[in-house]
Image (cartoon, rainbow, N blue to C red; front, top):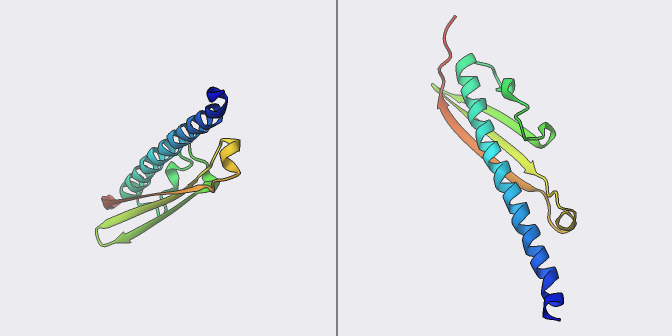
Length: 111
């Protein structure tokens, strides 16, 4: 009887742990994408760093990228809406907004 009462709770906890792992994976991908955008923009001087997008593992329609240049530095800012993929959680939780920001020295080589 106790198992029948606790089983839904345990199942919910397992689903939450799986979803948390997926969100952590997305955050790591967003940080990696920010690094790649900043690096490619610093090296080739492209305005938006779009050369590295789409980044593997991230859905482009859920990703927004901005690159700001201030003096010899540039800052890449990425925002990503991490999707709740588990159906039971999707009904109760909104998408999670993830962000990453990376500042790098602009190393554009003159022609």
